Image (tube, rainbow, N blue to C red; front, top):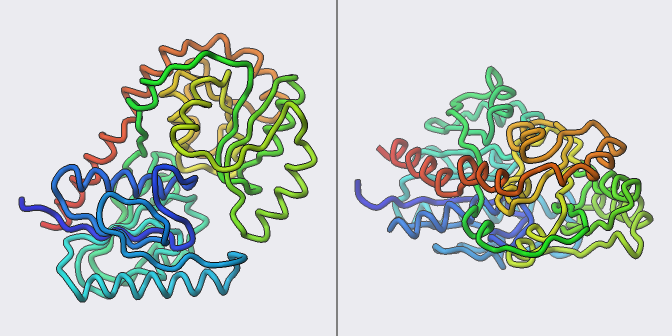
Length: 346
C-alpha cells in the first residue's frame, strides 16, 4: 500500500508531546512519530506549543481558567482546523483522541477512528453512537472494552497502550529511599492518599505533575495536597521525559492512587520498564498492568498502601523489566494502530 495520510486530532485543551503529562497526548505523540518513521504523512491538529514529528496545525492556547467558555472556543478552533485540512488535501484516516471528539468529528468523508482514552461513563451516551458513517471506536484495555460492549457502536478490539520500554529500561540509577507519584493533579488521581500513605510509612514522597487551570483541580491542590506537603514530601511540578525517567529509575516504588476506573496506566508501565515496583489501587485496568506480587502490589486503601511500601523489596526489578518488554512496548501499540489505519483506508 502507498504511504498513508493520517490526520490526528488532539484534545484541544492540552498540548501534545512526549514531555507533557496527559496520557492521551503521549499516545498521540507516539503514533505521530511512528507514522513519520514508517514513511507516512502525519498531520496533527493540537494546541500551540505541541511538539510533533509530523506537521502541526496549531490552534490557540487558551489564556486563564479552562472553563466552559474556553472549552467551547477550543473545540470550535479545532473543528475549523480539521475542516481546513480536509478541504486542502486528501486524508486517508482521521484519528481523534479527545474526550470531546464528538464536537470535533468532521462531516462524512474519510474513515474516522476514535480512541477512547477515558472511562466509558465519562462520554455522553450519544457520543458513543456517532451518527457519522464510517466512524469507529477503540478502547485501550480489556476492562475498558468490557465496559463499552453494548454501549458503543462501531467498537473495534482494544489496542493496549505502550511506552518507551527500551529508552526507559536502558537508563539505570542508584536506588534511593523515596516513593514517587506522577500524573495530573486532580481529585480522581488521589494525590492526597499517596501523601497519607507515605506519611504512615515514614518514607519521603516526590509528587510530579501539573495542576491545569481547571477551577476544581486548583481547588483540590490547595485544599487536599498542599496541607500535606512537608520537608520529606514535596511537589515538583511538571516533569519532562528525561527527568521522569531518572526519578522512576531511582525511586523505591511508584504509588498509583486513582479513584476512578483507570482505562490504562502509562506511568505504571513506565515504572515497570525502569524495574520499579508499583503499589496501586485495583481500579479499572490497573490489575491488567500491575501483577500483584510480581511487579508490585494491589491495595485497597492508604493504610494498605503504607504496608505495601515496606514490602516492595520483595519485587524483583529484573522481572518488572521483563514484563514491560513482553507487554508494554510502544512499537507493539504503534504496529496495531498502523494495521487499523491500513484496513480503514482500504
